[in-house]
Image (tube, rainbow, N blue to C red; front, side):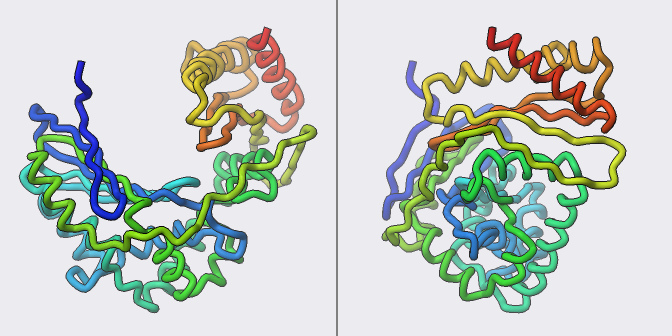
Length: 330
């Protein structure tokens, strides 16, 4: 059976994956740049995320965030972006007849953003508030602590958005230099799907590739060092619950057994029929929220368990979770 999608090699090393879905009434496009926070040293922590925010602040053709949003939302579409540990993505979904507009807006913001100094300072304040917001959400904060333990002294162990200290010291020159180094055609994969004209879409993309083509020699951070012993990190806060994450390193998204890990995770802690839910919540009544989760990167990953519990029952809860893990192993 032929693959429903096609891959096109583009000028400068970029690639495009496209699938025609004639039964749809909309089309989606995403620009994905390899990199993300994993490529940042400690001084530049958070710069990938900072750039993602700034690229929505204005271009020469669309000088404000409102004009960027209006261009897509004015035709009933949706536009957004995200930064991860290993990539940054910008995407839009539009009615199929406006696919050319979606492409135009996305390529405009990643190639022609002005990065106005006033926008840099204003967005710095926004990101600092974003960091503080997550600091005030224990479920998110404890996962950051967990990743810090899983990948100590490594970019994977840092918050994608950086720290208040690193965000406060980033300047426009840092941002320009980092963007120039990483927003290049060999780092770009474009995805497009929906009710679209494949030939026309590929032509429009080829005409939009104004980013630089050469790589600058930057390579991803080295793989994290091996963990040699169990690690525990405790932060005391005035909350009603103890928020606990525990887990271990696991498989990368390249590992042949990654799908088996996903199945194991489902059995362990996803859904109301999972072992953690049935035993920790239903049988023992120790927690309302208990679940397992995985994270996969190109050369490493982890599997973890989260539980929110009365602080007086924290030890009982951890012992119960460990019991489920031992049972699953056996």
